[in-house]
Length: 207
Image (cartoon, rainbow, N blue to C red; front, side, top):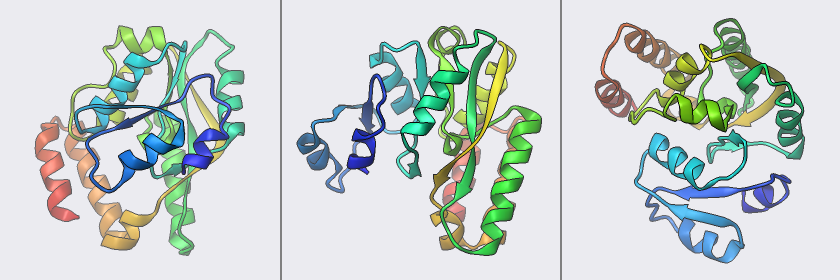
């Protein structure tokens, strides 16, 4: 993954470690990449990285997602237009099971219709818009959906059809149908106003 990051051609690249104990810190220390440590939690880690970044466009990538320099270029090209406040990519799951193609298609269609995206889709946003809405809400789960909800009120959302590849590990580990139903349940409960900490508990218990 470190080699992949080094080849992206991003104007700035910041890796945020949330207290890992699996040897990641040692790899980062030897990599030559710019990295920082923060409190654990995706929202906190991404906010910490954004605070250190000076670029006008912020691009958020999870550790289990694969992109290339063409994705970085696509963001730069679309964000030339000032009408866009942010966006996301289509997604493809890494596994070979035929169901993964259908799941990816459903995720992409839902996101295109709703303008709501998840972190697996590599969300990007203008810094001024990100700061205006207060960044990622300090939630243990659904911080990406919460950001999307608020961001789309600020302007147009770019739904790029180029695909990023994200890990299918959670579907393979917990079962495809079980995981799909769990994700639908969590989204519905979030939409109904359930607290994110309760949703995070449900998610952890189901894993």
